[in-house]
Amino acid sequence: MDPAVLAWLLSQLGPATDQSDLQTRYGRLGSARPVALEVLSERRARLLAEPLQLTVNGIVTLDNSNYLTGLERQITDVQGAQAPDDIADGSELVVAPLRRRTYRWERL
Image (cartoon, helix red, strand yellow):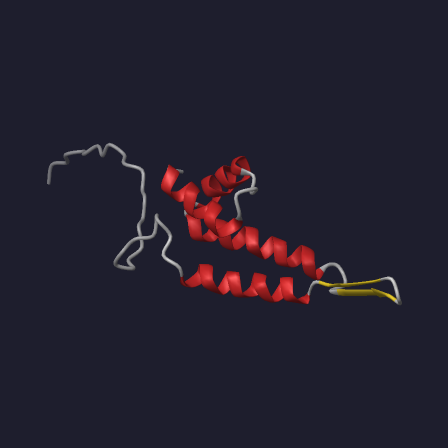
């Protein structure tokens, strides 16, 4: 992962995001956008695993529904954003290993 990709990921996910985790995900997924979407989706799933609202009458009220809305908006934004490692014309890049081809000449 080059510095431009790392900078884009940190701008999407926040500067406190673990860079070694991003590096590992990038190696597995191969592109910045899927890395950002995976991290954001995990954050959303963690938030949904807990109650969005908690009220202790007269003492405290916690409401994470705005945080959930923000995460969903950020996921939508990342899906439409141009990542630095995206291919400009929308075609798909395929990487294939090269092998030496051996020819066997046969007599007809």
